[in-house]
Amino acid sequence: MKVAVCQPMYLPWIGYFALMDKVDVYVFYDDVQFSPQSWQQRNRIKTGNGIQWLTIPIKRNFGQKICDVEINTDVIWRVNHAKAIEQAYSKAPNFEPYSWYIDDFYQMYWYYLSDLTIYESTFIAEMLDVELPEFLKSSEMNLTGSKDDRLLELLEKVGATEYISGVKAKDYIDEDKFKKAGIKLTWFEYEHPVYPQIRGEFVPYMSAIDLMFNVGKESVKYVHQG
Image (cartoon, rainbow, N blue to C red; front, side, top):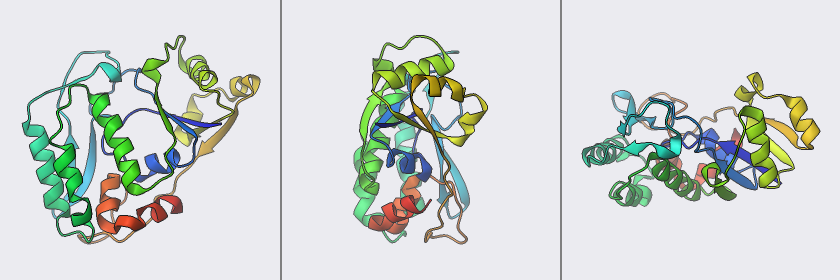
């Protein structure tokens, strides 16, 4: 049973979905501390004027968990994000087949940030045609402890035999604990693929919707290349 555990992100990049494609169970780690102005609430798209950040406005409470973060319910941010995406990609080769995504998603009302980002990530995964795992939320698991012990408790609860983690976690994960628990630890390193992209030279690390609007049904091929 291969498992990945990742924090929910807004409009994630391609590597987020490449990891999702590799596991049987994907756990959204939504009950850890929220980091303001992080990928949890914002991401980037490529426009005619360069890179543009799209940030979801939130109600700030210091130390709150991701799952408890409330969105500023002002409708203007949704209108602005939808407009920005349409302006950036209306001339992309595959904008029309996926333009309904903007109309549908940004007309929905969201109260909590993690509800929005988790829904959107699973939705984009389907459109990219990656192999969908089982999706779970850590906030529904009644976890105790902290750091590695908490993560191992999560993995044991879902029946993991292998944990696939991003390489940045090497700085704080105790590999011996995983060996003792009988869980194989695999490091996931992703090299960003180059794909056809409108508006000048290729710029990596945009939201995965950049890939979707540019190459359409070929998206999953580029996801796998990395």
